[in-house]
Image 1 (cartoon, rainbow, N blue to C red):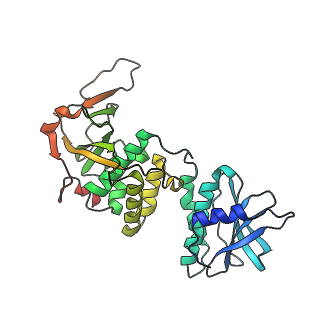
Image 2: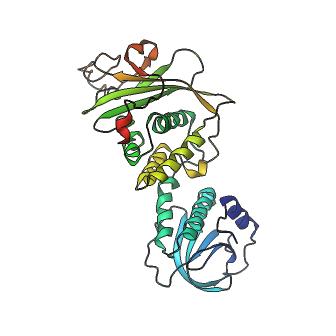
Image 3: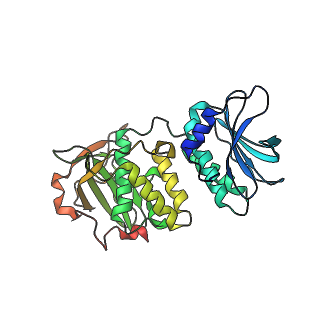
Length: 336
């Protein structure tokens, strides 16, 4: 059979298989790799399993995920005796994530001609960062924020390089959304169709100058529009493909940041709403830019540890650098 079994097909196989009456597993082949077969199976309790034939002495540790068990077992399954890695779903609430994880295992093992079981451990390890994402997904504010930061990554930079992904620090708790020794950028997104483009500034340090380099503010107005050609789903897919092409650790580093935002592969297809960037403005934030910082508001009263304020970008044209991505551009150092 084809080794490109989809997650939907896997889900269908598990749903169709009747739970066995005894301790044996009901199984069906869903793929092959250099070592042997891969089987989708269910046990008497209806729990889903993926059995992967492995070498007799695999010596590979597979990470534990909440709600999923993994163990090596000597058993006879679907007429084949041997050592199997048994991935078992214990909590049905994780069925969607487990199905996608297993689909990745089927795909990755099929491409591994050496029969190296570390490829399975790598897939599970990659999924660790997404496993705890909320199943209901991101709220609208988070979706717009992620769209804006991916817009900078994929449109304002010359390429999704390893350096560009590394500079994306916001999802990891960085003070600015993008930063390296030369350039820092704060991205703000407004979702109103008309009216002033006003951004909420979170604290006195958000627009404070970095220790090194120049600070910029990228201001976007992003609106839902049925004829628009962009979506959060589309930008995520584009960024992940470009990061994979960049090689090295770029793909893993990008996924770490997406997970930090609350995105998960389980959400693919959920954020397909067509969005249009109706305005985009890049501002240079210097000492004269309208902002509040620890330097402009010294000596806060005792007990006041932070404050937030709103910035109306109608006053910002004197600091505007660009109203669309240009090459070469002032943010290019983030990609190098």
